[in-house]
Image 1: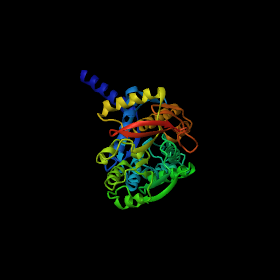
Image 2: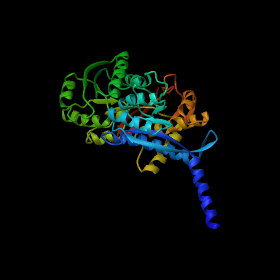
Image 3: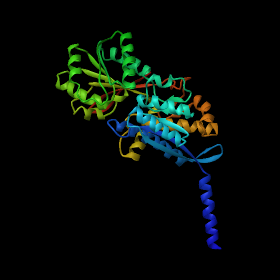
Image 4: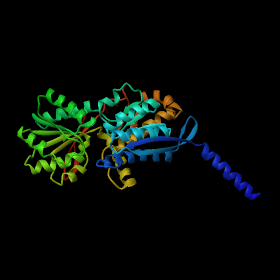
Length: 375
């Protein structure tokens, strides 16, 4: 009899466990390749949110649920991103956080939209992502129009740059950012004296630098990632070109100093990160950074807190809707007012974050140094 009681108790416990709903949140980014440190950063941020939700205990529609992170590597490649997207759709995820870059996010978004799965990017900034007419695309960071405007103002204002050479890495992110920056630069009295392009796998920039050097720019604006910008800075130094460099969040990692071979001078690089908090809101962000380091043993790169907020915003929408089914929580997500560690999160009609902030940084001793938070 005792054995039977134990057996029945075990079966009852198993029944309760199986009755608990599992909510799967997808995440995809480059966790291999030259910008893996960015991809792992957002994956870690999403994982922290999943762990926090499960530790708290969440009920949706009156039922206890357990959240799971379905993490995939898209290697920063558009083709792999679409394959990963289809894999996650087939796994029946309830929502998607990612991808990391605009070049992977945009093609993958078509697959999520076709499947009716809601997607929040914690890092993609190309305006094209939310201008496809999809009701499933959202982002928790400012887009390239906002970034470009802020960078153009800062370049001509605080940096007094008038003659600027622009270089992009031919990715959706790099080209979009350069386009918006050039527009802002020219509207504030600056001029583009050279236009060059490379690719995100390039290692030799001597021909580009030689042509740029002949135009005598005050500033080089680079649309791309630190994995490319670091070696470019090193070669600029070797060719006697000691001008400043500016770029977007792709440059806003301490890795750029290492990648430049230590040749990057203090204050030489200015970058802008989509997002940012100041005043009392910094307390929550500082706590997140401390918790992140305790959990993973490394510092936040850039977008981990935005991935965390993306998961938390999605979960709040599910709770308020009483359902984890995308079609049911979509109307709630579209009108949500979430208080995140990165600040208040609300979306406009396209899915862009409302009143997105921009944080500008420089580097001192190889470490990021805050310049200003603006809009």
